[in-house]
Amino acid sequence: QLIVYDLLGREAAVLVNEEKQPGVYEEVFDGSNLPSGVYLYRLTAGEFNDTKKLILLK
Image (tube, rainbow, N blue to C red):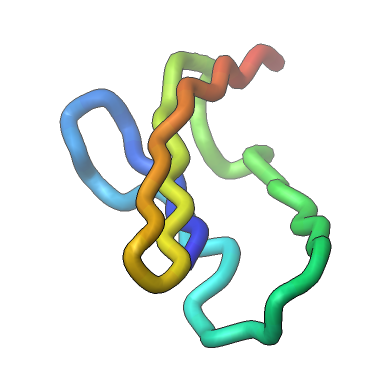
């Protein structure tokens, strides 16, 4: 899974919600419907979880 959250923890966008085979992938994030601000994106793959910061400027 690859999900974008606002700073209040609300889900802002779901970019990937499926199981994929091991490999390298690229996803396009269209934040045109979201206001400028700081967001968090969380990548979950099996036992692996990582959260990073995303700054959206318009």
